Length: 74
Image (cartoon, rainbow, N blue to C red; front, side):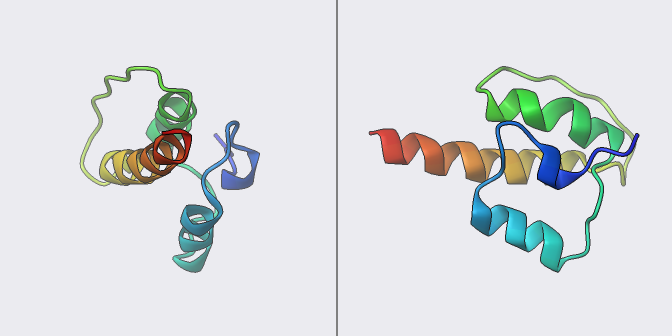
């Protein structure tokens, strides 16, 4: 799977996207590509994956983006 961070819809916040680029993550892992778009759309997600597959990063990127968007609406 060649899921690029720039192709996410809805997109990550600019600060989060800049961090992803700075750390050199060019493509999402399969679990990230499957979960992040749903999480950014405020959908519940359950995933199981092996260590090193990007699950923790998936949660962190999505939670930061969703939380900041939510706070702007309040």
